[in-house]
Structure formats: C-alpha cells, structure tokens
Image 1 (cartoon, rainbow, N blue to C red):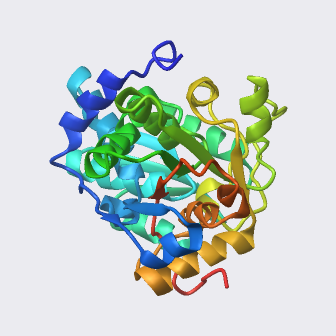
Image 2 (spheres, one colour):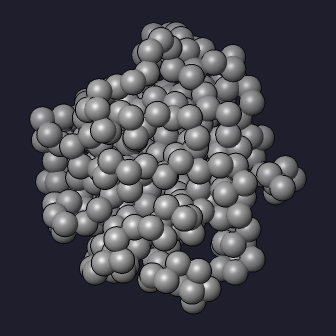
Image 3 (cartoon, rainbow, N blue to C red):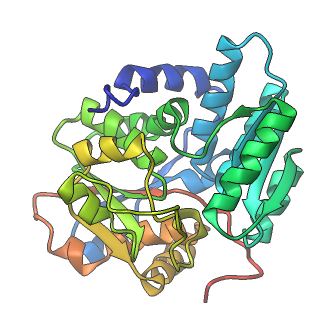
Length: 325
C-alpha cells in the first residue's frame, strides 16, 4: 500500500542521504523513572532538539531540496501551518536561498509565529478555520508563483519525516513498538514505512487528542470524516487537525496498529511535566501526548512481550509565557 501511495523505503533512504548533513541526528534519552512507571524500557527520540525545534525540519528541507533538484528555477515556496511546519519551511528556505511565505491561523502560538519571521519568511495570518488556511495559501501560490509544500500530504515531506525511523532503529535496533503523535499523518506514515521495512514485526501506535476518530478509520479502512477539515478542542496545537491526509491515510490503514491512544489534555500536561522535571527536556503538548501514552493504562494492558518502546518527542516549541498548567 505504501508504494501504491507514492512513498517507498527507497525514497526515505534517498531523503536520508539528501538531508543528513543539514539536520541534527537527534539523541535518544532513557529514564529510570519512566521504566519504573511502565514496567518496560522506554526510549525517547528527541526531535524537540531538531533544527527549528521539531521533526518538521526533516520533511521541509527534503521537499525544498528535492524541488531544487528537479525544477530549473525555484524562487519561492508557500505553505500553511499551525506553526511547526511553518518554522521548518522558513528555516529550510533560508538554507536553500529561496523566499518563503507561511500562512498561519490567528490563534497560532506567538512563539511559533515569531520564529517563522525570525527565519526570514513572510508571515500571513488567516481565519480560525482550516479552510481559511487553504484558501489564503492558494491565493499566495497564484500571486507569487510559489511552489506549494504542504505540512503532511506530500510524498517528499513524508519521505523526509521517515528518516526519523532510519535513525531511531540504528540507535535502538531492538525496539518493539513506537508511539507517534499524529495530526495529518506525515510523520507517522513516514515512520511506519521505514520502520516496517527495517523491522517488519515492529508495531506503530498512533497518539491523538480525543475526538479524532482515527481508530474508527483504521479499523474500518475508510475515512470517517465528512465536510471540511475541523480543529479538535485540545491544548496540543501541533496535533489539533481532526482529519489525516489523502496520501497518508491509506498508508496508516495498511501499516499502523488499529489500537489508537486518545489522550486528554491532562494526560498531555502530565507527560510534559514528566519531561520537564525528570528528563530536563522542554517539549510541547503534542510530545506530551506521546509520553502520556507510554504511561497510560492502555499501554499497561498491552502485550508484555512489547518490552522496548520508542516515544517520539516531536517538538519543543513551547510558549514559556503561556504554559498549559
């Protein structure tokens, strides 16, 4: 199914070769306290320490440089983002020497908007609904003749995000499962393709806010969402989009586990606090969701043979003046 959707393990390996000298090989952390809380070995992949503060840098720079390889002239790129992809594309565009336009909803965290501008991109605010992002982005794309690089539903973005799994399984080859926070599904689908190619019996568990209906999607094999995209009511701005993508959804149906971890805001906060206090790592709420999933009753009920659990700390772009507790 992954190959049919246009992304293969070879694409991810090509992305790895393309970007490995431009990004950080992020470290993996362990915690005795986490192991005691779970009765398993927990390995935290610290993408919060990645360029631009999140995993999004991988997909953004892979997509920009792939376009530069295939297009004679690339003057500008444009995207819409809740913040992290916008920061990543702004950074990648600066590295590549092209102009960048980023459309963000007005309620996006100030820390993320400021970082986008700090990387040299042009910031364009839009309305509060997902459709506002798409309409504004399309207008800029036409006016500026810019290449559109979406935050998740793009084969080169997915391939870039999949490099996380290539690194992670080099660092911890005996992983039995990986917990991955998900919004549109670019990271989770890329990780699933790469991890399953390297270690076919590994399990990829998806972590969402409540209300996403993703488990229904995975079990039925059909998209359960109707109408225009919506935002979920959650403190995790990085994973508030309800629907997964047209490209990413079939990959996840094919490769991800049907059991989905749906986390409350309180569980995300507890995950954040554990990382701050015990591991001295600054993470945002989306990362806190994955930590919370590792500590959840649902994980305790999982097969005891799943001994070594990977947790993706997807980002650390936190507004320190507006912490969610």
